[in-house]
Length: 329
Image (cartoon, rainbow, N blue to C red; front, side, top):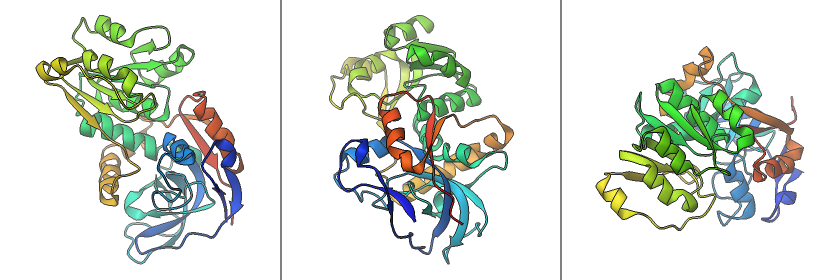
């Protein structure tokens, strides 16, 4: 099969279309003719060598989410058959014509969605649900601040919060603000030209927000803590800006605040399965109704994976970047 592989860590140029062996079907696996593969920040980290080795996960190939048609099933699979359309999260191997997925990490694709839309859902919406609702425990009528509101996870988190009945603020590049408002953000703060902590304080009368979902890390930590209302929860999903910072312990202590971190790629399989199950049970029908919508920025042929990585690295995307593997009968 055709797949994106790399011989060494490095910049986007290391990504090359290669002929590799088809994956083998294990007892709990679905073998999927891959129609769409989402691109994620974790893919960029893997390409750069942040995980230390190319086979960090279930495959030497990168790619954490897929959508396509089942072409084979393992002997312990339940609930799926050849011909079913599925989407889901994989431990690697998504940048390929054929991918395997543990059936407990798969979800049926709602009939109203095409393959590209489906490929833009699993990783970002499951991550957003885990951060915002499972860990952040956001409730209706509370207020959430979502950083990187134009990103894949950011756009998903904004939609989930609004669907829940919460108020949503978001940070984004000013050029992307109009799109982020379309996702459901009531207030969009141009982080390049305005201090988001001051904007949050003004918008809440000094109270702060109940939940913050952050991808930036160190440069935002102190302001995040000071932007939380008493009893507020900060959920750290990424460290794009750095990993070491000073923490205002007085505010943490006297404000009864909670700080939590979450990452999906390194989680044990049973934990990932539980994350997918929680999301599926609560939100999958919302896509069929049109209450939630995957936000697709652009689609690249699989052979142009390097270009997709460059677009993400330049922070040019609004929503998801998706790779379209070539069709193989």
